[in-house]
Image 1: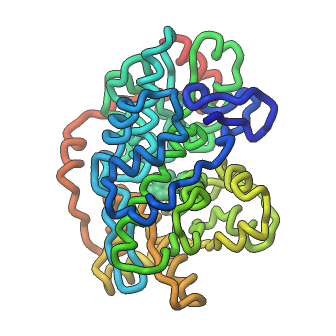
Image 2 (image 1 turned 90 degrees about the vertical axis):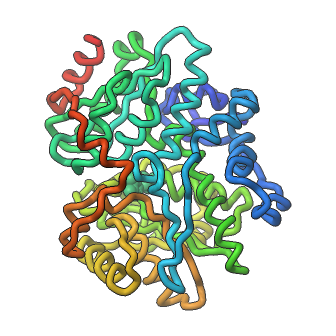
Length: 433
Ligand SMILES: *Cc1c(COP(=O)(O)O)cnc(C)c1O
C-alpha cells in the first residue's frame, strides 16, 4: 500500500516513509491509495476472532511489507493489551469505554501503535528521529507513555502552561528518559503554531529528522479503526442491526478512522459528529459550506479545535460528495451548559459517570434518537472522568475516586522547561540539545 499527499504535489510513499515524515513535503496529509476491503467472512464470523487476530487483519494491508508479519503481530498485540468494553448505559445508549489504557484516554491506541512502528523503523536508519507534538492535554500523556524508552526516538512535547488538568500534566512531565516536556507560556494555538513552524524551517530540518505524533500521522490515525471493529464484535452479540455511533470530535481523526472502517466494510448505521461550540464541521453538515473558525475554550478541551486537520480526509473518503457525506454523518453542537446538564442527568438516572467529551457525544446521540426513535447506538467514551475533576466533581457534588493505576503519578515530580510562546525559542532549544 502506498500513500499520496492530499495536496497532490509530491511523490507517493510507503507506510514507512509516511510514518517517518508525518506530513508530506507539500504540507498535505497522507491518504491510502486504495481502501482495502475487509472480507465479508470476517464480518460474518467476527465473534470467532480474538482482538489480536482482528487487529492484525485490519492493519496488515495498510502496513504492507514495511514491517514483517511477526513483528506486526507483536506490535498490534502490545497496542491493544487492555480492555475495550461496550457497556449499556440504558436501553437506548451504550458506551464504548476507550479509557482503560495507560493514560486513560483513547489516544493510547494511536500513540502505542505509532511509537512501536517508529521504533521498528528507526533501527533501520542512522539518524535519531525527533517527535514533536503539541498537546491540549491528552495527546501529550499518551505519546509520552507510548514512546517512553523507545530507542532512536526523542520526544518533545509542547503544552500550554496552566491549561491542562493536574493528571494530564503529571502524565506528560514525569516520564524522563527520552521524553522532554516544554511548558509554553501561551495557549494551545501557540504550541501548535510553533510545531508547524518547526516542520517548515529548512535550517532545523537539516539538523534534525523531525516527525509529528498528531493524528495527521498515518501511524496514529489508522489504528483508531480497530476499536470500531471491537465495538461491532460486542454489539452484534445482542443486536441484529448495525449501531449508530456518536463520536466526540475535535481534529476529526477518530471519526474519520471510523468512517474508513465503514467504507472498507464494517457495518455502521449512521455516524454522529458530536462537537462543542467549536463546530466548523457540524456547520458544514447543516449548510454545505465549510469555514474554519477561531478555537474557543470549553470544558471538553480536547475538542477545542477551530480548524480540524482531518476534515480533508473525510472529504477525500467520500470524493467530496456533500450529498453522501451528509446522509452518512449528522453533526451536533453542544454547549458547556448542556454538557454539564447531561453529566448530571445520566449520573442521576443511570448511575453512569460521563466525562465532558463523552457527555457531548451522549447528548448528540440522544438528540438524534428523538427524531429516529427506533435507532439504537453507542457513544465513544474517549476519556476517564478523573482527567477532568474540576468540571465533573462540581456537577455531581462528589469527589471522583482516583483509579489505582493513576495513584503512583501523584508521587512523581514534574519535570518541564518553561519557554516563551514563539518559534525562535523552540528552535534555539532544539538546536542546543
Ligand atoms: C483528542 C480527544 C478527542 C477528539 O478526537 P479527534 O480525533 O481529535 O476528533 C475527544 N475526546 C478526548 C477525550 C480526546 O482526548
